[in-house]
Image (cartoon, rainbow, N blue to C red):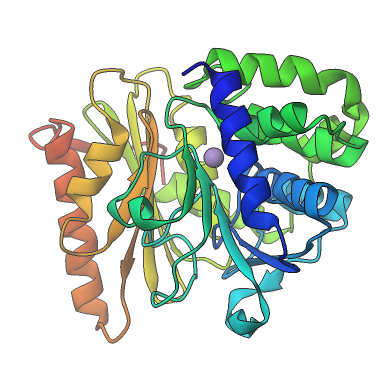
Length: 344
Ligand SMILES: [Mn+2]
């Protein structure tokens, strides 16, 4: 089916699902990235415009990265905490840019959403959801929503257009990472409606002073092993940082794999990145967290989380070593010698 036809029939189903409903809850990633935030706001717009639904957007964590905080502020978004939600108050539950059981969202496990729209590979549990639109060939979930908006004849207002444009650009690293034709077309559609000055301000979002200490620790702890750089941030209050550091380290011109970990909320969070095309980051991550936690992602980037509640420090360190060994083995770098990235 052509993308436009698929979008048309999906939008039709969505309209049927919305009929007669009043309250929609949109669950996003615990530590939402710009794509996730923009997709949620776009779904809210669709539900408002097409069916007059009242919407709440909820997550289980925080918005940490400077750029993401700037985006939320610009959108005037009031994100609710999953822990404080009375789920019985809502007629419909939706998930965007994440799926049930992935470990990166806080939907209570006994609940199944009615709607899942995502660009990560489909998961088993998602197949039981009444409405799904999973397009793993797309660079972003925002792109799927741009197609819905166009199909529904809704012109996005400036903040929404700006958020969607930023969501696509950040997930695809300015269309350089896993971008599809649909992502390019979505950007071209959004461009005239977006606030270009605001985009620039968001990208240069303010950071708290502690950011620089974190960066210094990240570099100080970084070790080079074969084609990989590995580092750890220890206890963090901003989970977005592990992805940011993993991205930063991949810019090293001799490195094709990076891994960064951090401890947050009784979990070990892991980000990996690669510039290799023949080894899928998502598969590497799944091997790393096998029987220990959950993980998922894309061709060139992936994330995972391992629960740490009731573990001793020694157990934690053992687990971290285990995950690192799995990573090095999966990418074929376990035999290489290890050296510091920068002088202590
Ligand atoms: Mn995404």
